[in-house]
Image (cartoon, rainbow, N blue to C red):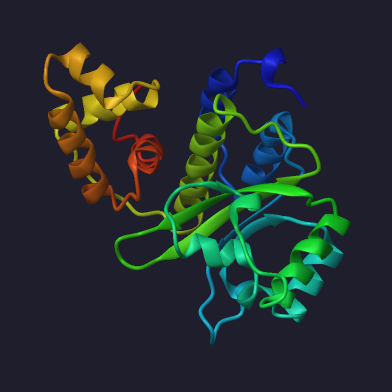
Length: 243
């Protein structure tokens, strides 16, 4: 699928606007299914990352996976060998499945998992790791046969995925909060949400790039966000900034 037929940034913000009106996790699944399909995604799962003594079934927040694949994945304990989950533990940056490298000879189980995934239409994928300051680890993993992953579409997909995760977590465990962000931190995140870099925002606000970076870092700490995009998604979700 090509991204030339629609504005990916506009689609991302329209998706975010729709999620605010959805009261249930099942409704979020439907919205994700429609919007992510524009980028070629057919399946997705949002889940916590299990430790050695945990079953992944108890950590799944939502999913749109083929039932047979989900049953096989859980019954065979694939989460303990899945190279996607392993890489999620090691990075805070979104990544393509092809970046989750492993040695087929040393890790034949990982090779088996990825090979079987292809048989269920999960030929390629994109994964967003979630890391909270309290140690919470999760991911949103999306997949399909033919994905539209470019430098232009990835930021939109990243924001959509982050916002979907925050929306589901709010629905399942709503947490009332006052706004912890200063006026300048809010302003900095608003410009970041519109795609401005720290240098761009510094020029707009008449301050140095270093000052903007400090505001972003402070906002990330206050919101338990892994990075700037995560902070923007969380601030939008909880209406800490207005667009």
